[in-house]
Length: 389
Ligand code: PLP
Image (cartoon, rainbow, N blue to C red):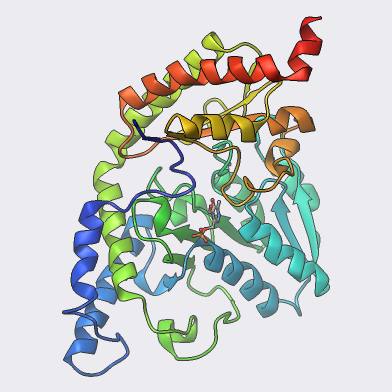
C-alpha cells in the first residue's frame, strides 16, 4: 500500500545523515562528558562543538544554551525557572490562549502555587496583538511567554514586536520555537527574546533532546537538580549521541532551509488553493501570509476530524486533527476555539504538515483521496443530510 506521511508537525523522521553522525557515540565514543579521562574529553568536545553549532545558528553565545530532553522540558524550565527566581519581584505571567500544553500545564501548576496568569486572546487568524499585551502588563508581571508559531494552524506571531513591548518594561520574554527552529530563520537578537525552547525531533533530529536558550544575565532557578552539568543549570549525564544528532540536524537545516521553504510553501499553497476547489464548505485556519511554510489546516464542515483521520489512515495517508497530544481526546482544540470557531467546526479540522521528504506525488494522492473521503463521510452525516432537506 502507498504510504504518505503528512504529519511532520507531530514529529519528523531522523535524517539518515543525523543517524550516521550519532552512530559513533553509542559504542566507540560512549564516554561521559563529565569524566576527566580521554573518553570523557572526547565526549566533552562533541558536546561543546554541538553547543557552538546550535548557538551560532540562532545568533547566541554557546554559554547561553543548555541541552534538555526536549521541548516540554525546555518550556517547563523557562516558566518555572523564571517564576521561582523572580517570585519576590512579582507573581504575574502573560501568555496566549493558543499555546501548547507544554506551556499551559506548567502555568496551571504555577496558578495553583499562587501565580496569576493572563491568557491573551488572538484574532481570527491566530495573531496576538501588541496592544493587548501592553494592556495586560501589570507592575507584578515577571514573564511573557508567547509561541513563535502555532503547532496547529501555523500562524507565525510577531515575536520581535511583542518582545519589544516586554523589553521596554524590563520584563523577560520567552518563546516556544519548537515548530519554527530549523524551518524558518531565527535570530535571538532580532527577535528581542530572553529565552527560547526548541526540540530536535521537529527538525529531523532524534526524539528526547532539545535545548533552552537563556540570554546571559537572565535570572532563572535551576529546574533539574543533581550533578553540576550545564554549569549547574541542568543536572543529568549528557545525552551525547542525541546532542550530536541535534547539532547535525541544525547543520542540515541551515544548509537546506532556503530551498525547503521554497519547495514546501509551493506545495502548501497548492493545497490551500485546490482543497476549496474540490471540497465545498471548507475554511482555512490560520494566517494566510504569516504562516509556516509546511502547514495547512482546514475545517471541513459536517465532518468529524477523527473519522476523516481514520479514513485517510486506511488509505495510507497520515495527517492530524490537531496537536498529536490532543488528537486522542474528544475535546475540540483550544486553539481553534480561540480563533472563534464553534465546537462543530473545530471538530472537523484537518492538519496537513509537510517536510523534507514530501513529494509532489504525495500531494496529488491526498488531493485525489480527500474529496472521496469527505463525500463518503458527508453522505453518512445526519448534519449534512439535514442541510440538504
Ligand atoms: N511546544 C510545541 C509548540 C510543540 O509543538 C511541542 C510538540 O508537539 C512541544 C512544545 C513539546 O515538545 P517535545 O515533544 O519535544 O517535548
